Figure 1: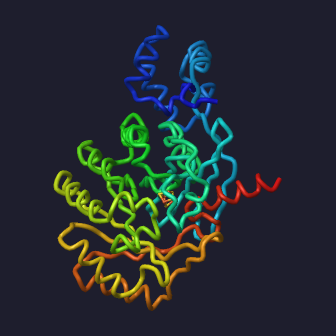
Figure 2: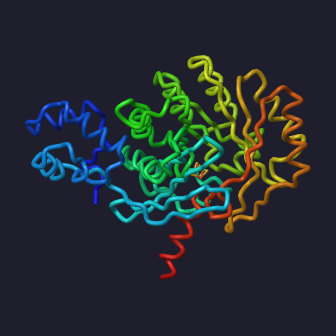
Figure 3: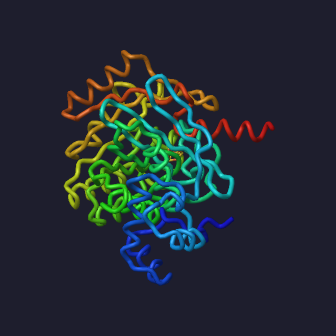
Length: 352
Ligand code: SF4
């Protein structure tokens, strides 16, 4: 089924929905009423929108639907991270994750079915790219998470760090960000939304000029091209210096600090010398370095370094004046590391 043909509320901006109402001979104020039911009250079908006239609800549900995806499985960890396996209309499956850290409640969103970047620490890259997600398929991941929260919980953050490379699905991702940010949409502040990339140069440059106050996270994972191309094969075409140049330009335009993500892999990129080279590479950039020990993936032989090595790596960066955050491992215990639940599901389907 061609998902582009499915008319779904979650694919639409307010002006698009108003235009649909007009084309159906209805007043435009109905658009805001519908959006409020979907984004504030969490309805899943138009029948639940009880203050709308019955014939309008029936007519509208013939034109489009609220949800085009449905939750298949929710896997839980002891640290209250929850991973959602979500079915798309064409039987593809994707993942989104709910992360709880005190009052900070984050939805981690996938942007593609599979991924072409083939990062060597990531289960998603093993399956290759099948297709881009639509805007609605991304917005719905956040809605599934939001609708699952307890009554006293509130969604505070969204990160585009699930399966896929967001900047390779640029237009759909930006439209999704605008819907998530809009008052009539999910109402999440742009400064609470993060887009993560392996370093798609054109995408970083375009993003700088969108006028959005979102956070940019660049998955660097290495201090030079030799190591980076081992970890991220697509780096051979990109080049680490071009990424750092684009990051500097991004800061000049937006005045927003950049986060560099760095997964530590024992014996590959985690030595003190690697930290020294990284500090030289990032010299003068207004940034944070987020360090995370690698989540072991069954298919690869990479392991996280010892606590001692991790500590020495972070201390070296700090000595050079970099702001460093050591992130805790989240999700590994439910195979919630990037793409792993989906990969297991594929294995199950292949075997059965
Ligand atoms: S880490 Fe991200 S960009 Fe790399 S293969 Fe996995 S999903 Fe793709």
